[in-house]
Image (cartoon, rainbow, N blue to C red; front, side, top):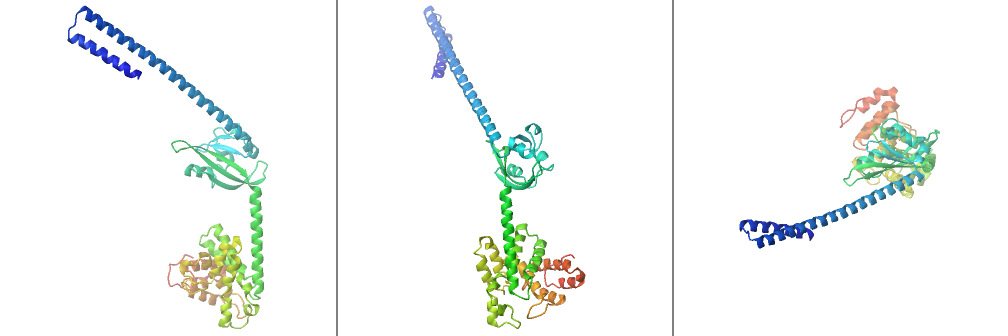
Length: 408
């Protein structure tokens, strides 16, 4: 409102001056009147300016107070954050986007021996790593994704004690969406990891015992499950399976015949040829194995692989007649390893096949019984395991109806 009055006053002054000049008013009384108006206008303008200056001074003071309050709040926040940082039991460090260590708390010093005075100008991987950004570094992933990242790794303390730590990297984002720094929190999860390892070891021992129980029921197979496991793992490695998939393959190989526990021994160890009715009973063992394994939570996935290990690549297998890639890869690998181990081992109803006979069976199964890619990986296994008969293996390996040759 005051600004409006000032503007109006100035406009009146301009108008009066213009009117005086254009109308050539020289009358003494009129000049006095206009002089008074000018002085009044000037006084109003000066008053308005002084009032504006007063308002400006008040605004400046209020702004200063707000700035002071913000700075004080920020200072208190930093002090409180510093207090929390120093008194939290977990090792915590603050890392810049260039991996420079900005701050560490006493828990980091206790864990690593690195003191706060030693971090200036140092990168985290120079003090705690091997001279380069650590493999699986959660700080690196947090900088890239702008999201919280975690990682578990094995470490040695300054007293050479082996521990496992869980790293949690929390990115601090500014208003523009850029990462200001990353807060890294470390938790000692050694007890948890070792407990998991013990549970895993117990689980593997249990699976191995099951495999021994399976093999003991069939007097002719001996260590069939273990030999199938060895062949399967080689094939899996050749096909580039992950560590997790290889573990699943190993367990599946050991348990693939667990359903045979439900088959009468007189059928399982029969010397002569099976009747059609007996063969139908034998064909139930993948389903029996699946039904029993699926009830065990850690083996639910394994159960599916066991169920399909007698499926054939052309869809003529059992129990569901799956075809091609519809058969799980682990089951396809197992099919190759299982057949080869079975035909090259002595059974109560026949002696073991010679290598040439066995390779003929395997080659005839390409694209019908067996996945050709899996079969190629199997032949690479034979080239190592039967190195003394390399020429024979190469001869049969190259008898293909499809797919290009694999270098020796």
